[in-house]
Amino acid sequence: MCRHLEIAESTWHRWLAQFSGMKANDAKRLTELEAENARLKMLVANGPRYRHAAGDLGGKLLTPNRKRSVVGMLRDRFGVSERRACVVVGQHRSTQRLDPPPISDDEAQLREFLRAFSKRRPCRHPKR
Image (cartoon, rainbow, N blue to C red; front, side, top):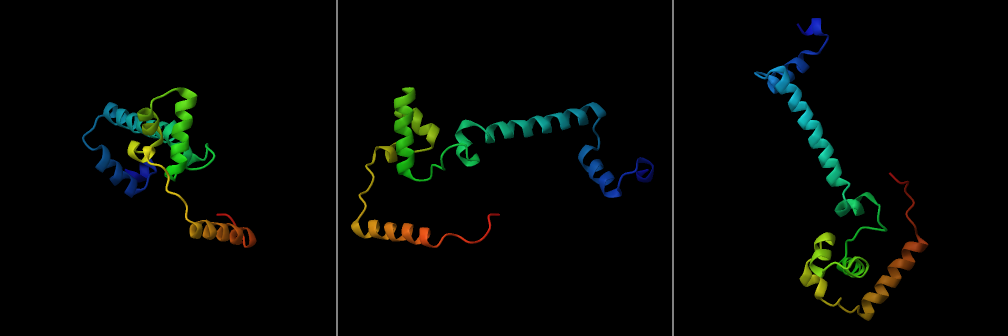
């Protein structure tokens, strides 16, 4: 039968395991639901909450300080509450309310050294 249908035997066994006991309408509906599920996953992945991962924004919002500034911008620009802005950004409200810790002199010097070092010796390997 596999030779007649011009399919591999492994394909036949996979189909049999997946669709055995189903009628043609049920199998068609299953494939439609799988396609719809894939489309919905893409919509969620490309939604506004995940846009930073795709590079649509200026950078990822990794640090609490960056998230604090974005929450402030959302509140000013759109007039939303702090609670709503924190939910959108993914920042805890208790973290939002904390003042950022002051940077010590040693840490400021270390940051300055690392920035200068990275400018003097940029990455040489090709982008992947």
